[in-house]
Image (cartoon, rainbow, N blue to C red; front, side, top):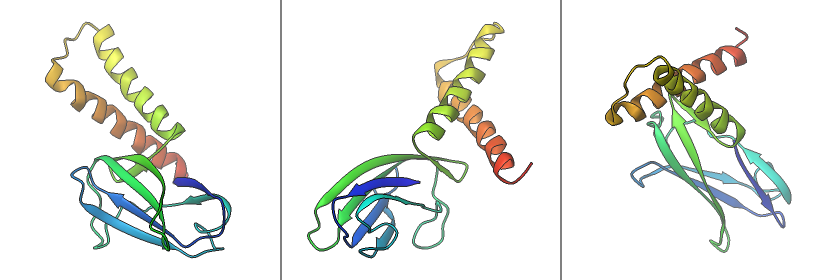
Length: 139
């Protein structure tokens, strides 16, 4: 979910850039409708590019712009892993779970080379995401 607050009804563009800075998706929201209404807005991104490709894992940048003036209204980041985009509390929970996996390895006396740190965190994050998906799918 991508969340933002608008001072007035506005046509809005939401741009999503991949880790390398390439534009993956551009979403347009009309004034007064979901994503373009005055006040709090929350929109979803399905993790797909404009061409239907699944976004690769990594940190994706989001830019929210007013269409008429091209004024940047906000910026945020999304972490994409295993086809899921995480933000806020979900991201913190998944990262905490990944760190618990790593802590468990260290507590068990297993050495962890620095090169493997990101791999272990990512694998812990992937397991957490699979469990989260199971919870959302009803089991």
